[in-house]
Length: 85
Image (cartoon, rainbow, N blue to C red; front, side, top):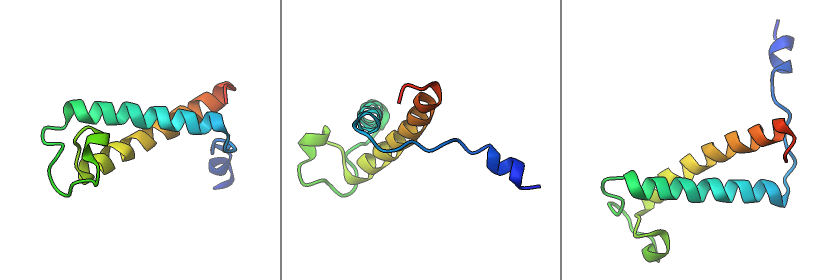
């Protein structure tokens, strides 16, 4: 009963510089989206060099990079399924 469900799992991709580049680009896009849409991005604990991250606080940066990793997982799996990575 469970064997057909296990067959649905996508193949994993080995790490390569292309995979890292896709993840970095997705995180940069997510940080840009967060910077544009978060109402109070500098609330809470501040980063040591907040100007480097556009004045964002710790919570906003953690949230945007989490979203970037979700984007990255989808992009990497999608590109791997198409044979690009």
